[in-house]
Length: 347
Image (cartoon, rainbow, N blue to C red; front, side):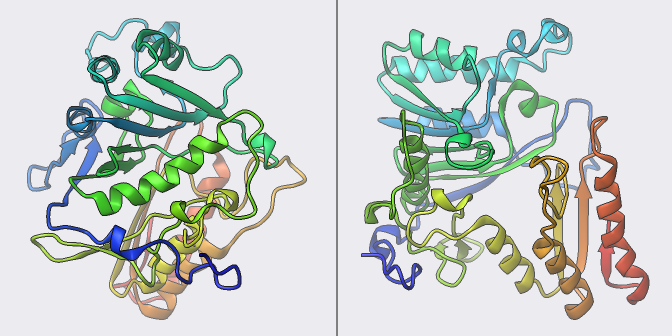
């Protein structure tokens, strides 16, 4: 049982999370059409190819956590009803393959963020799959002042996974820079992620409420201090899966923010970061209710100032990027003016 006084003690069954040497870990990325990198840089697996392999590997059940669904170009607005460069075809390929996989007998459970009226694509998938595809929507206003399910992840038969930034949107496959990781034939990671996705699924049920304590079978022994060691030809990789907000954490599951801070605090030479938006504060609580949250920002400064770590930090630049985001980034970069040239924060 989970010790409530020490929630990280005796969580989960470590033997069930011991990794075999069959684990294959690959980096998955989406590179926007027309963007060409220097040939000396490696090109990894396309997000589309990673997802297609997950669907091809599926035998019994696919569990998905998602934000929203716009895999088909016609579902993204009138200005996208035609796509002369054919960059929308990857989305259609994934949509069609999901349905084909369901029609060969594989069950799907999809957790998505609540949207008034739902999403046409998941509604159509349910109707076309003879019950093989089930969907639940999570309305965070039932438990918090607000929020969304921002996770984009797959667990396939409890042994193949994807965790990354790519939405279920054709543009995330061909028009936006995205990054993720997939693991195949890796039940230690597959079961761990499955436990987290099961919580999402349960919280999508009508009238769902957070329990005082999640069942032990949804716990994990994998933390920053006791990670899962995944055998790889280039050396064992220490991995663990985190979650937020607090109500979605079973026994042993670490908090996203604290895990990121621990990773930064362990950096000795360099830390490379890339985000869409950056703010050391809440954003959506109303003009008079947002709060300053400097913990992660402080960890970046601490790494550069106290341990001479070189930090490279990229922020996505969109037409709708808030002006204050640039101020936060420049504030970080300004610390480098007080440090020797060979370390600091580079924006």
